Length: 220
Image 1: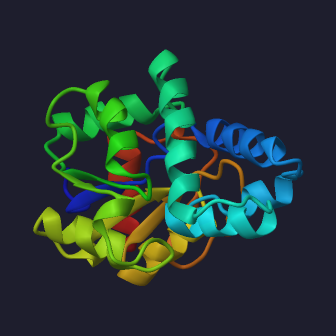
Image 2: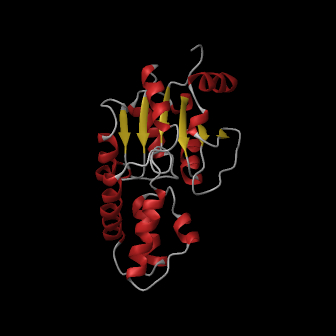
C-alpha cells in the first residue's frame, strides 16, 4: 500500500456492532416501567452520547426518578444480556477488521460504552484485534468532545490527523473531526452529512484495503 492511514479508530455501538436497537428497547422498557413514553425522537437524540449524559437525558425527558449512574447501570445490564445471546456485527465490519489486522494497520476502539459492555464484544474477537481501547468510563469528556479520539490516537502513538475514524452518529463524527481525524461515516440510526473531512458510505461492506488506499491517497 503506497499510502494508508497511520491507524484506524473504530466506534463500537452502531458501527462495529448493531446494538442501537438493544439500547433503545432497554431505554423504552425502563421509561415505560415508570408509566411514561419514550418516543423515537428522544431515543435517537442520545445516540453516540456519553452514557452519563444519556442517563441524565433519560431521567429528565423520560421522567425516570433515578440517578444518571443508576440508569446507566440498568441499561448496561439489559444490553449486555442481549449481546451475550447473539453478537449483532454490522455488515462488513469483521471483514474490514481482519484486513486491517492482516496489513498491520493499527486499530483502536473508541467507544462511549463502559468497559463492562465492551468486554463481551472484545471476547468475541481475536486477541490483539485492537491495539488500544478507549471507553466512556476512561475519559473525562465524552463524545462529542474530541478527547476520546485524541486519546485513541495517542494510545497508538500516532497523530490524530493521520488517522481514520469510522463512525455512525453525528455526535461521534463531531468528536473525530474536532480531534483532527478523517472520518468514514456509515449512518445507522441518524443521518450524517458529508463534509470536507467526512465521507459518507452506505456500508462497511463497500470498503476494502484497495478502496481505503485510494481514498486516503486522495486526501493526502
